[in-house]
Length: 136
Image (cartoon, rainbow, N blue to C red):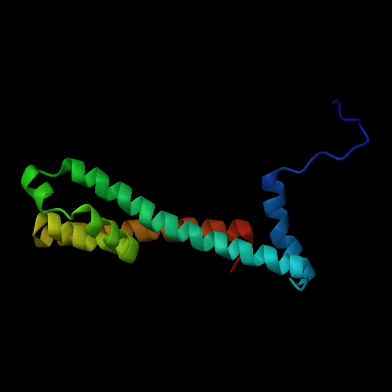
């Protein structure tokens, strides 16, 4: 169906998301609908942190597991322990992963560095999402 020249263009998702923060600031975020949007954005931000914390750590550990020797792989966590560590500690589980698989200070240091890198990536993604959503 052809659009007539008098109708306004349909907004894109990106334009709506970038409009919300300025709309919230202009209105003082007092309307119930605006408050609901702000709560949904904070919830989405929290979900992003959880998904990245578990997902990125899992990807790094799976990548590292493929590189391990048979002896190191035999020392690695079983599925239940692995899942519990990822769920409970997220990126910090890299410390335990490095120690359990390598049994050395170098493995622990590698886990620490990897955990720091993952936390920095997650913090950067959170910061960018906060900027895009107009959240503090």
